[in-house]
Length: 448
Ligand code: PFF
Image (cartoon, rainbow, N blue to C red; front, side):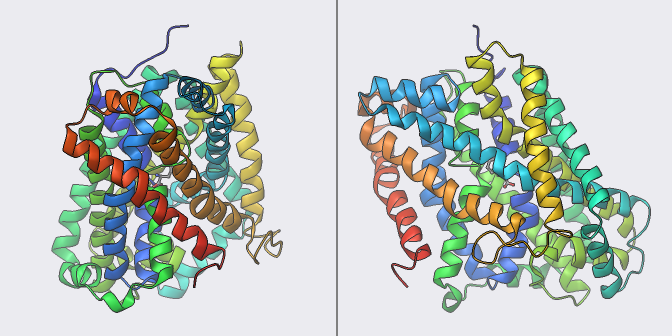
């Protein structure tokens, strides 16, 4: 069967940037910065992107492009080519399942975002007090049916795009949504510069205070670098499998990583400048954009309109990432069975929707059900995927490309000069695995 390919390298860059730029950048990163004391976290995060994220993104793209298959069959074929154990194919399988686990909670949060577009558009932020804003958000979380409705809509939007295939679905959606997202970002930045407190936001995010760099900050920064760049689960691999041979992997990776990191930091600046201009606290945790930010919008000129634009930006980001979370599994079904793409999307959509139902209930009816370490369903899925499964997937891919694959095959794909190739090898074979391994040792209490 003829496989689809991206039209050109820009569509690949847009699609992969679309996967990378998501709730991680706009919802998670700003609150993680707040909770971990600001600048220290930002600096460690940037270091993680450069020394671990970029090399591993190159690795994942090269694996996909060489195999030209979905992650499961792709790893199987690469292992065969390298004379390595056939068990490597389960690394691809693990990634495909991880994507569905992430989408289970991602879609519910995507639903909150859709709900907030409507809230902003209908003027519900106007002059709200801090307590009203919290009550609004709590009321949303306490209503299973409303959450379910938004989660269902978000799943339909996601599966609707994936069902149309690589060129008419994924490519088209990203070609429209990502430029629109950056256009909204510009408006938002202009607005924050004119009415917000950019200086305070800048100081909070970029004044180095090394005493705040704790093991927990490093741990969450590394985990978040994976999540943010969509690494370790085969999304980038399957996107790489649709990439033409003549495109430079290193250059495209750098564009994608820069777009992802810059967007996260610029949105952070915009959010904090509005938060500080209204004397609100920066460390609100997960409620930052849903509780704190609406208070700021409600007190500012044109705040409802800008609030609506802001939540549209978040929705576009979430949508283009969600697409990439299911594509590996869909590609696997389409490439191994007679089932049509649209039908497999329906099946996967229903399965993930059901998982989302459990996540929805974990905010209300099943609030007291704890899975492990006193975490509810939502937190368990989030922690399990971003602190364990994605780094583990990334670690194993790095080991495979660095130690199992034939060096000439790797060089063939990367096509770098000697110095850059050595640099990639040092980061992929040593720095990234040691960093991830260190995180695991810390996580399991082996080192303190
Ligand atoms: N990178 C996305 C974000 O930052 O929100 C999340 C994500 C998408 C993670 C796709 C992993 C993935 F494969």
